[in-house]
Image (cartoon, rainbow, N blue to C red; front, side, top):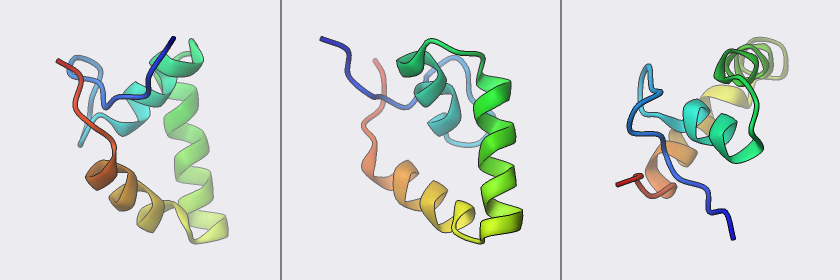
Length: 60
């Protein structure tokens, strides 16, 4: 069973997008672009990132 973790290797800030990309088995750049889109146009991206960075466990 796969678990969602913050990535320890594929990270730019906290590893949230890298962890989501590893979980979904897609390129992390795609996840980052989608996250930026939501942050700019929807407005919930930055808050969601902060919450995810605090809630998601680290990968060991």
